[in-house]
Length: 439
Ligand SMILES: Cc1cc2nc3c(=O)[nH]c(=O)nc-3n(C[C@H](O)[C@H](O)[C@H](O)COP(=O)(O)OP(=O)(O)OC[C@H]3O[C@@H](n4cnc5c(N)ncnc54)[C@H](O)[C@@H]3O)c2cc1C
Image (tube, rainbow, N blue to C red):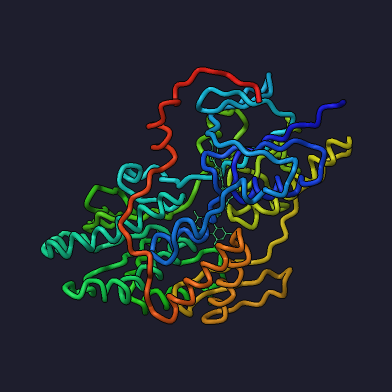
């Protein structure tokens, strides 16, 4: 009997999941590898960081997602390299896994743009552990301020957000809400007007890809809700307890949240493939690699150009469509057919700035309608509920949002730090295991 082609997918993010789903009922064996045994719904990480949702509410176990898909298998592990001659990938525990087709969908990390001190002192929001730890860090500052109020003069309640894209704006709005309601009740002994959210943005606008009306609306709402928004402001250096700006000002803060942009996952540096802007893997318009047609890269790690020669934005909607596209191309290749170019169907952009305030811009493909305010906020909640994986997660998120909306509460106010996957692996007794198993 002929062996089925083996498709290995690195990463259980939006791109990887959709590639695997697209290969359902296809005569292939799929093996998905991820450092975590779950998929993280990153657009809601900021809700975990601001005590609105639990980490488990925005994640789903990969094996559970694919429990009905017979040609799917999962393996938890960290990919560190690929041997292109022998066609196998190498895991950190020294396991080799062979493949016929490879899909690289390992996502992105935050880009520090070479700013001194960011790597050492900034807080990122990319993983469940980042979000849970940020929540704990924020709450910890309030506990410290309560125990020693004189620390407030040293900036302990100054929270600096760098980058006024959707992540920064959503985080800033949610933090102001957390401070002015839930934490105000928790800490009656503190003057909560001294808790500040300072938002720094290098460009003259918030939410840059949006229309000027949406941008000025968002700017107005942020300021009205108390965010100290500073446009045309660049960070020069980050220290453990302060942030130095290009204009010479020094802001005292132990809490700098870096949301200034991403770059492709560092795995790309080990792979010896051609790279393009933002360290993304250079691809053909069909999303595979020019001299390795059996290798695809998708999502945030993929450097594919649109018809105007620009790279696609690093957002979930692009990753989802690229996942589906790669699955279709692999099916064609198995049948000996030619692959076709990837074409993104742009549905638009949306972001929320907190309670009852959002911006939603449908693309021209879908009427071009722009919404601001309550309706945009409602549309955002609805879309995120639809895309959140798992009925149970949707139900819990909806219940929590309803409760938080009417009670002004944020119920997950626990200080409990979480171990990151890199720390977990460093502590693992198997990390230097030398065995080599052909899967
Ligand atoms: C805070 C935040 C908010 C966002 N909000 C929005 C939004 O509102 N709308 C929107 O469209 N987009 C949003 N995005 C962007 C969106 O989440 C990404 O574009 C999307 O997740 C990219 O999908 P991906 O599959 O390429 O990578 P990811 O979803 O990042 O998945 C990559 C996977 O690869 C795994 N992995 C990485 N390295 C390895 C390795 N070496 N070995 C094994 N596994 C590995 C990771 O564990 C992860 O599961 C947001 C992102 C962030 C961080």
